[in-house]
View 1 (spheres, rainbow, N blue to C red):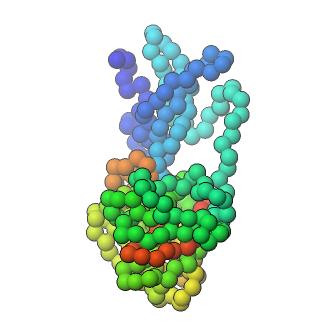
View 2 (cartoon, rainbow, N blue to C red):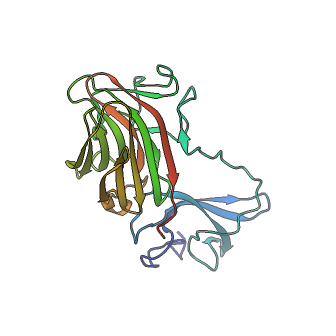
View 3 (tube, helix red, strand yellow):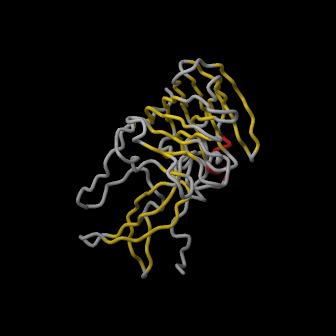
Length: 283
């Protein structure tokens, strides 16, 4: 109902703005009587492309004529500002590497849809994440044997150590960069080879294949904006443009996720460790 609507927007700022798509704000008053808004927005990282999710931002709020004024005198969401006068309440920093030594999965891990059976274990092979193979796959509408963590940076890397010996045909395990059922990138191992599979608009295309020896293999991806390199062991298996996984392209708000998966009729795959970290921009 505000006569000045929209009270906060980036649509008039062009494609070089730092923060886009502000929305879903909650108004908060601090103990000192100051007003702030907590809202969602996104940070473009490569022109007007981004692969991260919407994130939480703060802006100060004033009041004029009974209506809130977001970021008075600025009218946009800044990347940095002086924080409100509140008691520090830091969230624990997530470790770069998960060695799967705890009794339960760490809170940064997510699963696709609700699991109705326990298809993962941290105790069957202590110090490893064991994924039981089931028919559900990362491109299915079910609950696959897959755990994912959010991509939090414009420039980032992720890698994992996979120990997998397929128990039958069609049994595979690997590393997924996942956006939805129809758009994803999979680095898939079947015990003999590693394949890089690009899935766009529900169509799979194998863009690289690399023969590997038996035993554990390190699978990894490294992204600089929308340019991503896939590695199997010490070999760069493929470099590709992941623009098709961007948020403006596919219309999803939660961004890319990355993590291990396993699919097939029987057997299991073991992940010794998973590593994720942000990178400095090129140059």
